Structures are given as structure tokens and as C-alpha cells.
Length: 189
Image (cartoon, rainbow, N blue to C red; front, side, top):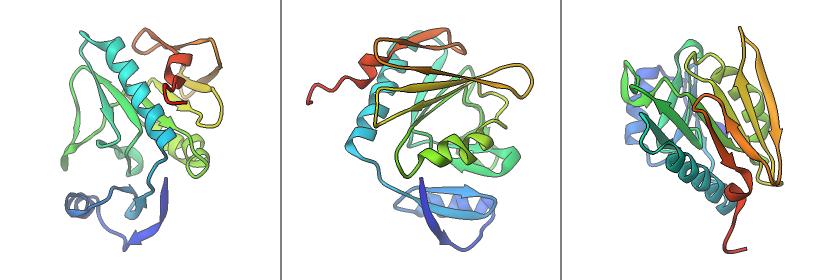
């Protein structure tokens, strides 16, 4: 998650130019800009494991898995973030003001940490819900073997299903299941 505001308020177009020249990543919300905090090795390992699992499972399908190097914008709420991972199926839709910003993720994955959990569950998820393309929102815990999948239901409803050790994690939007224990596997532990 982000730290305190690091820049004066700016327009989206100014932010895009600023971000191109920046040496670190920033989040954006209605003109406010925050520097992104670095992650832990555990955070990076879990994000890499889920990207690898999604990539392997979706191989041969018209889907692509993106890392936190790629920005997502919620135009309706003027918010942009760098999710830990996300999936787009079909055509990539770019923000009209920035070809490096994607606006149509089907699945977004966030690895929770002490500094990001409240935002990932609350403020950030509230923004993500405005993405009409989004079907599954996945939260991965760093502190226990637990994954929560929020799947879009009818209207504005979201169904949250928790998963734990020994379970498979279904992602209905792409009709696949991920092995929870494999996502948490650490050969160095």
C-alpha cells in the first residue's frame, strides 16, 4: 500500500507523465499520489506462485497474467493501482490517456500484508468493484494458509468464499481451480 501523499495534486495526464519519469511506482486517487511501499520476500514469493499457477492453468487460452509492474485504472472513481497480479482474457483495453494502463481485468489478486490489508479489503476493493470486467477478486494471506475469493454475483452483490489448507480454490470467471497448498509451497522453508 501507499505511504503519505508525496506529490502535490495533479491531473491523470500529469500523473502518467510523472510516473513515466519516476524511479518508484505510485498509486493515484483523484489527483492525490502516493509512493508504493516495498514488499517482503514472502509477499513476492506468494505473488510469483499465484502468477505461475494462473499462467500454467490458462496456457493456450486467450488470457494473459500481469504482474504488479502493470497499472490498472478504475476510470469511474479516478483510481489507479498496481495489483499484485491480474488476469485479462480477450482484448486488452488500455486507458485512453495511457497505453501502459489496463482497464479491463477479469481477476485481480492482492497479497495481504499488515500495511495493505485494510485497504485491500475496504477502500481498494470498493474502487475495484466499479470495474465492469472484474469477476473475481482474490485475497491471499501472508500470515496463514488462507485465500478468500470474492466473486461477482447478480447486481452489485459479491460472494466471499474462504479456502484453507488442503483445498482447491475455484476461479469461476475462467473456470479453473488452483491448489492452495501449492501456492504456499516454499522449498526453502
